[in-house]
Every structure is written in structure tokens, then in C-alpha cells.
Length: 60
Image (cartoon, rainbow, N blue to C red; front, side, top):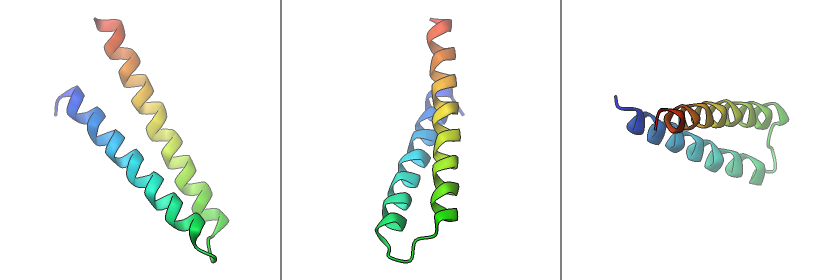
């Protein structure tokens, strides 16, 4: 898998978590634990995306 396709996949997963989070928050029976878990996973993906993009910039 190329770096660009890997970044695209990470960004798609981040967007999917955004949608999942919006659905859960809109639900009256949303679980705080589930919300925290999704936010944590989003942050980990965002950190990885940022790290990979910074690495790409330093190579060029």
C-alpha cells in the first residue's frame, strides 16, 4: 500500500468515526463511555495522519 493510499484510508476511517460520533450524540441513550472511546480513536487516527503527513513533507 502506498503512503498516499494509506493516508486516504486513515482519513476515511476518521470521517467514519465522525459520522458514528454524530449518530451517537444525537441518540437520547448515548453512552458517555462510547463517546469517549470514539473521540479517543479519532484522536489516535488524527495523530497518525499528522505524523505521516509531516514525514512526507520532510522528505520533499
